[in-house]
Amino acid sequence: MALMDFIKKQFIDIIQWTESGDEVLASRFPMADFEIQYGGSLTVRDTQAAVFVNEGNIADVFGPGMYKLTTQTLPVLTYLKNWDKLFESPFKSDVYFYSTRQRLDRKWGTPNAVTIRDKDFGMVRLRAFGIYSYRIADAKVFHQKLSGTRETFTMEDLEGQLRNSMVAAISDIFGESGVPFIDMAGNQGEFGKALFDHLAPTFTGLGLALETLIVQNISLPDELQKMLDARIGVNMMGGMQGYTQYQTANAIPLAAQNEGGLAGLGAGMGVGFGVGQTIAQSMAQSLNPASAAANSVSPAPSDKNAGEPAPSADEIIATIEKLHGLVGKGILGQAEFDAKKAALLAKLG
Image (cartoon, rainbow, N blue to C red; front, side, top):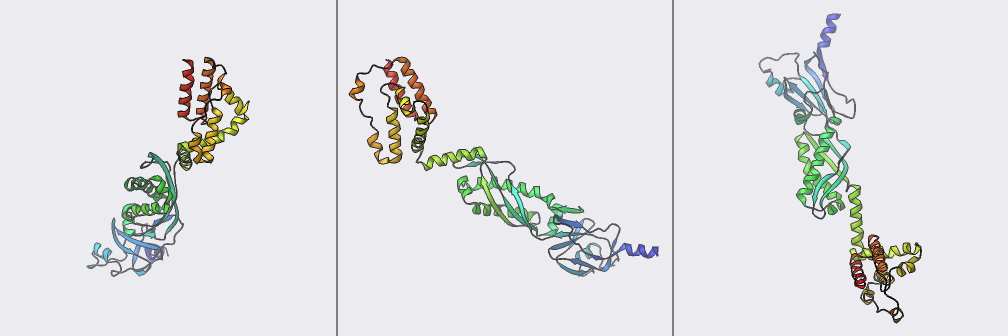
């Protein structure tokens, strides 16, 4: 009885693999000291491939189907073992199974922002992420390049390599295309196609087929995105002049809430300084650009103000300081400040 158990334990008649989990890409058939019986059966299911390896050399590769293991179905192994002269039964050979089904919803992304040279913004850092799918297309190449003689090879073993290849490709694509970040981010489909075409040969070289690649987002880091948003806002308002007018109009309610309101603000700035008129002109230009030319010339001082005493040096210095504060708040433009400062300093002479 013990002899019969020993004999049964040594011979393998059926070789097949039932995938044990979604993560496994390759698995070595548990041979131990067993030997394959001549005429035994090999079953390769759909979305599988099997590879026979003889003393480190890849022999025969099988796709889906059921095979009877003979010299006709194992031509390479027959040649390597010189079975055309004398067939040995049973025989030893390592057998590896590969899962060739498509792996969906694999996520990729830039763990850190990638620095690229942009046509519009110079050197910028960007982030991108999306999903992709792939499958094993050539079990022989996959065995030679990746899985080798390991008992099992999983998607986790491969994920880092593929993700890093994608991150490197992003830098290459931006450098080669010369397309500005704004245009690329606005057409993620085209960017995804370019990335797919760039990466497909890399996957092929590993025995894989890149099936799909989708770019879900291209963005700048938060601090750079805020700067870009500000620039877009300025351009939407017609440039810096329009932006200054918008800021001035928004500042009026805030100034009115301060102690003394706009009247107190204007009175404290000395004779000859028309802050109220400047604000009114800015509002008029914002609401009716056609009136800008008409309001650009300041009216001559009225006779009512002609008899008022000239401001003292302390008043002039205080007025300049207040004007400088308005520049910092965006209420007064730099050119206006320089002109009024020069006019006030002239009064000291």
